[in-house]
Length: 40
Image (cartoon, rainbow, N blue to C red; front, side, top):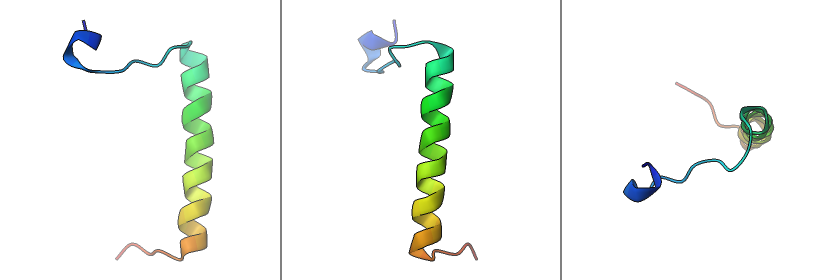
């Protein structure tokens, strides 16, 4: 099992994981924009 190898799994439905990932994408997009960081 994955847990035996030290891997933590998401304790929810695939839809809940998708929602969390979308929230994190929005959160980090805003943080990067506010920081002024640019990709060369």
